Amino acid sequence: MGMEKEYSEDNWKWYRYDHLDEIEFNEAGDYKGALQEWARNTTENKTNVMEIDTSERDKEFLSGSLIYQQKVKEQHKNSVFHYFLTRDFLITVNFDSSVIQSDDSLLLKKMDYTHNAIDGFFVILGEILSDNIQKIDKFEVRLNELLWKIKDKNNINRLEEIYELRHQILVWKNIMIPVKEIRLGVEETFGEGVTEGTEFKRTCKRIERGYTLVREYQQEIDDLVNFEEMVSMHRGNEIVKTLTVITTLMTPIASWGALWGMNFKVMPELEWKYGYLFSIMIIAATTAGLYIMLVKKGWMGDILRGKKKNSFFK
Image 1 (cartoon, helix red, strand yellow):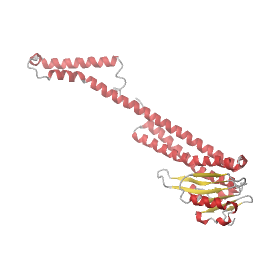
Image 2: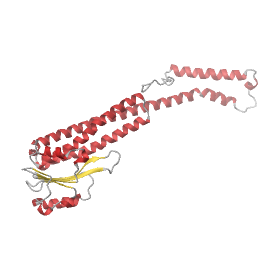
Image 3: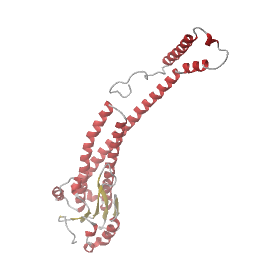
Image 4: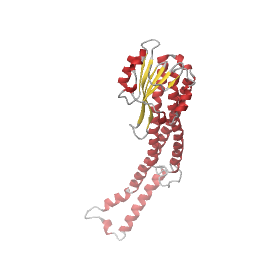
């Protein structure tokens, strides 16, 4: 094949292009038709896609597109590269190692230890995962800080931060799932024999490590969300309980006021010398009696106690 070469080993080659129209299909050998069809279908592709072709023995190939970098705050700010993988060669289009902060010379050095195009492809996937795992390690610091912010001062801003971190971890998970799918697709396409390569095994371990971190942090964030919901529910119940008790304690005042506010012609209490003092005493006595009854029944709870610093419920 007379394509522009980026890397060449005795057993395989890597052809790296910036655009699909740079590929020389006439020199693609037995893969010319498949390569042309892949290029046509890939032109407008901006998302994760993977296709397997095992229709011809020893001519199997794996092709598709992979989002390897995604901005957390903006959906359409991402980096996508396209790949066409056989046992003998790998074609990548629009892959930029600088996006994942990987040095080209280091990437090619790792290629020296590969034995086929599949191992070479997994070196690239390994670098993509390394970049994302480094970001996840920094994420751990933010999560730990948030954990203690909740303890120190819990409010709606903390809940907003939790959901921001939750969205961030879901973005990383969305990057790792297609890589995991590619690993399974490679085994399905080329058989289990390709899994013996060192780089393949190393990248598979990296996939497992990254996916484990994402899963564990996602569980921790879910626990924080559940915790916040529990605290909010408790405080909401306390607010309702407080308002209910206040309304109950105001009932005697409202009832006696309604009674003495009637406009009947004959109301002896209005003519009493100490009627006003008597009404105050009646209202105070019935209110106090009602309060004592609520306390004895345990319906007052802790609503009359002040909140303590660094406490979730007190």
